[in-house]
Image 1 (cartoon, rainbow over the protein chains, first blue to last red):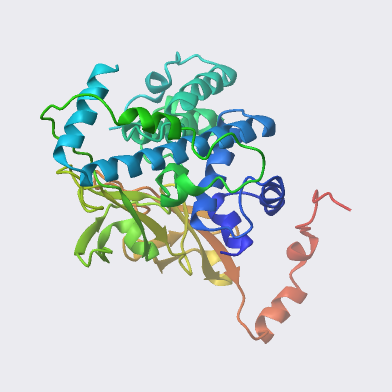
Image 2 (cartoon, rainbow over the protein chains, first blue to last red; image 1 turned 45 degrees about the vertical axis):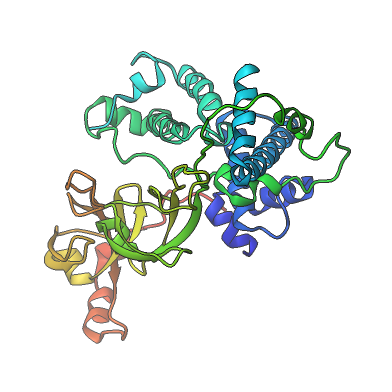
Length: 98
Length: 302
């Protein structure tokens, strides 16, 4: 989407969004995912009192968390397709390792 | 009736603005949905807390709430969309820089496969899908019905709740991707995009617009028909009204869940006839009081 629409929907100033693109917080393509990400950054700064250095750390950790969740989802999907005996072994192993 | 915003934030009614802000920040840090990607209940709790903060952080709204002029409902600005709900969230780490491993979980996966056999079912829920639905302004304000086609081809008749705001997310339970291994299906999240209206503007549950009136109607007073989202009403323009005079049409604004409505605020705009009128010109030439009045007195500026 264009930057004007983006700013309107994200309730942000154009200069702010430009600086966030520059800082690598959101991508220049400004997709729906970037909009949701910008809303998060706005909340972090305006509501939670996080400064720009902190935003960078939060985004990096969140990205890692989402990647990890996606990876885990792939494992679970692979397990679901696997032989029931394999699933049972996995479940038992998980039970044994709290 | 919504809960007491002071109770939601856990502050006394005498709390200072700083105390309210601190209480909100403490809760928001725990409850922000993007900081709780796996907890579905976080969104509802976060919205409750941020609605309470929106009300109490605005001195005017807080005063009116304390005075009992407004209740705690319908005051919040829309929250979200949340990054965690984007399907791309897991693939977003496009930024450059050194990194130890692709996800930090690969090492754990090797440990997953081992142990003894046992008969346990392995099921987990399907993923949520996201859709955007464009809603005409009045349907969002008044509530209405809309039809959405899901990626699966299913057609769903959706109820737009009265007073729905831009960015509101409606959750269709079980309409997402199918569950895996017998797990429940995910949900379809429909985000509403409310179209602007050529006349009405919305501020929370208040509707505002400019109503053109003639010079005679403004000076002498009149009864005119005024459009509102709840249908046209007869509006009494008091004598001596002016451009900028604001008239309140109580209960003709944005619909609430309980069937009541916010107000409609009409700003009058005096409009002269398009062509100069000889009689009016003659009158103004000899109208001494009118010549003495300086509308720019005390304007300041340059």
